[in-house]
Amino acid sequence: MTHGSSEALSALAHQHLSAETAERWVRLLRPAVRLEAAGSSDEAVGHMGGSPKLSAHLEWPQWEDHGPLSFVGSVDCALLPAGALDIGLPADGTLSFFYFDGQLDDGEALVLAEDRESWAGARVLYTPADETSGERETPAGLRAFPRISLAARPGLTAAEPWHPRIRDAFAPGAPLGNRYDHPVCAQQFLDALWEFDEVPGHQIGGLPHSIQNPVEIEVAEAVMDGDVSWGDPALDAEIGEWVLLAQFGSDDASEMMWGDGGALYWLIRPADLAERRFDRAMFTWQCS
Image (cartoon, rainbow, N blue to C red):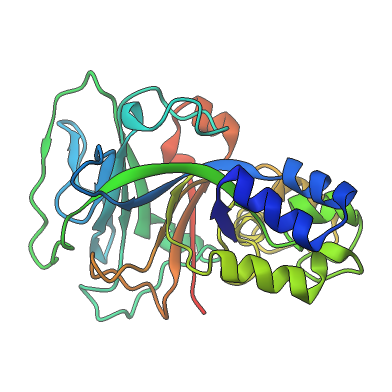
């Protein structure tokens, strides 16, 4: 929902909440790396658009019967600020993100978390630093997005109060995805959070900037085939298994527009991340 410095988010919380509640809320913040267009003095840690560099043995990802996926962006794990994340990314190597964005079929086929048949429409590929890699040409029929170099901006992230992580801290047992009777759900505090950081943006790790319900809920429901009701402890447990790997928002400079100003999200289980099983990452997207 919100990305900022520890000082700024703490000040915002203490302005609108009691000292005790503010301190509890601040302890729930999670570190993330915001990815922003690199300036002349910035070190680029990755890029959006352009062409990816992939291991020689990796093929450009395809969605069978639909075609090749578009390259969204990549990050060099070795260049991300040390200690800036609380997820176990590789120490080096490159993560590249691909998505079937409708260029080839005028948006007819949609990649949806709840549709297993569409999961091949979004991929994460990992190229270890010690493997031979080279820049790949964009497949015929696809237009590469303009290349935008990205710089890293470490910070903290806050989630909406109905995010399961926040709900469990202040109102365990409250209905999933709904407001509850607590100061963190007060409209004045919510308005301040939304004004602080309204745009999803691009991000590695941290709490997602969900545009609708928390994206962890969407992913958990999807892997459980939707065969579970909200309020079921099994769903809550599954939700807790997923962390944000990367998020890419709509971006004018890179000519990326995901629905109506939406964002793409890749989530992964920490155990799969530790084993470098990026093929097990889950994808969803949201727009307003």
